Image (cartoon, rainbow, N blue to C red; front, top):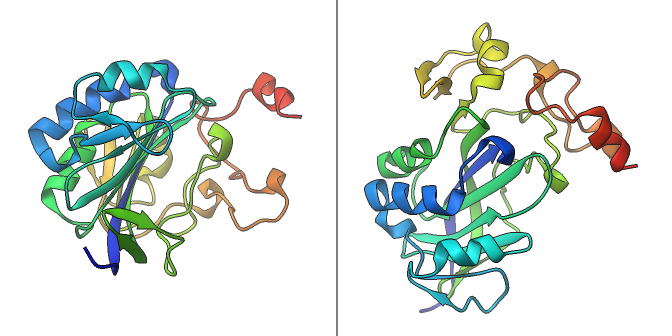
Length: 230
């Protein structure tokens, strides 16, 4: 297949692994029900991805040292799951679909639970798709990554196409954001954005200044976690 330029929906889930079930099992259940194209065709923790289909998928994820990758069926081109990391795990899906695609949204929300901090869908424009593999960086990227090294920085400075705030943020954002209650959190699809004090500052050069000035206790790094990073 010839190389071409594509726009993709970028979905990210941020969760606290200590309060979450195995994402690999939840992924398979949600994909089977809502988005069969997200079922793994190939998977593994290093390239080339040698796993095939769903057989052994959960077990291979359990052995992965860090990130675990999978390739679905078009239009789902790429996904990554955090197997091990810091206090916040991040899972990502990229699909050549609009951000308001009903199946993507149903799949995304099927994975939420009380230990999840935040879920969002944004659009990445201008990625290269070559023989089923996505290449970047995108000239027009999606929402910035909000948990480098597993450390939650806060909400994005600009609103995504849609997002879900978990119970940790439900009360914090309700006064500023229009949304509907979904799975114990708040689903926002438009309207005003959150107070600036809740927003990360990913463009700051000094890493110590990238964290939001205010965040709820749940995803906030503990003093012990901060000392370990020094």
